[in-house]
Length: 429
Ligand code: 4AD
Ligand code: MG
Image 1 (spheres, rainbow, N blue to C red):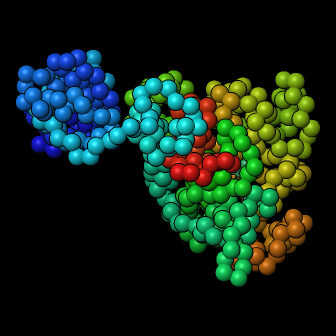
Image 2 (tube, rainbow, N blue to C red; image 1 turned 180 degrees about the horizontal axis):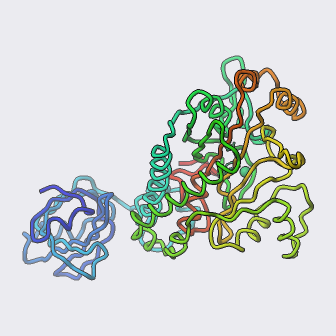
Image 3 (cartoon, rainbow, N blue to C red; image 1 turned 60 degrees about the vertical axis):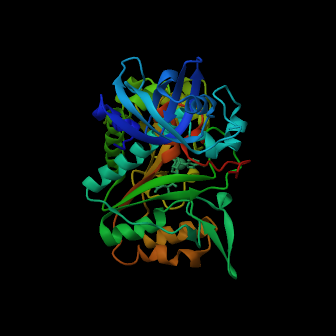
């Protein structure tokens, strides 16, 4: 019977066939212990000399790390084994050999591992992180679908900037220039006027010359946008979606969290409602902690760390000064120096994971903002059209998937949260 390691418990006492790779091996002359991985899990298989022809046993003894294999064996319950089961090997066949596999079970430096990312992904830790990534993406999408959102994809090659011109990746588009999308937001705004509640999910690009633990040149963003929604509506949507996501990770990935050393109680604590802090109050909080950032400036990692470590769950900072945020934000009618925007800062010093808010809905005001920001008006005519034909208040946000995974997994650098990170000095593999 063919099966996979995650389902092995259904076959206790029976003989099964597994297709996989040798993860690790130990031998004591008469017994060989093979760690077999198949992409679904890892299991120990035990080969006893007396049960094999001499040449076959020698082949098992000599088999190398990451050789691909097809084996059969009977399934035994073993409470000491991480998978809960062990395999008593009956047959063994090598499909593809593996000579001098570069990643041995010993410690390697991060640069070396990054250079071998295509192989590093086979390791147990990377496996756990990628499974958590999958749950995070899927549960956010599930939540939005349950709430009646339509997924509608936005273009990657675009004629104009969304998040400022300094971080644009420019590319030739025949006889013109095009830019890789920094955010699907502007198109989401058009799409929500057509479909009410929409979201896009895809890679976004920022030519940020920053070599930090939280910047990628290519990262994935999930961006919901809702017609007739206010900034308050959107903060509520965010906290509910993120709480749902966290509960799903606890439900489906408890073992993965454990295997990477994450304190699960931190993930369990992620429950709506999240505290909300006005920018002015956040500035006061910073000053009382000895940080003297002047009013009007956006927060950097230091400020976010001070603020976010005051709370045990994510905290919204809302109504930043319009001067430090993007051109499209609706001014606060109570005090137009402030924008109706909100960033969500994750606890434990992880900092900003979402950015969003209410979009400017007045035609003239938006047009002036575009001119003021020295953006090419002709590239935004379609965007201004949305304020010409039945404009309504509308709001949305973008959640950076890799930053979210970094926080949920409790790891210290986002490079391990994406299969193939694109960083300042890395475009390979
Ligand atoms: O705050 P940002 O720039 O907001 C937007 O792009 C809005 N247009 C989204 C919207 O309202 N639809 O980016 C949103 C999130 C950040 O909070 C952060 O989590 C992530 O994207 N992010 C990055 N993640 C990794 N590397 C980078 N260089 C990132 N820049 C932003
Ligand atoms: Mg932001």
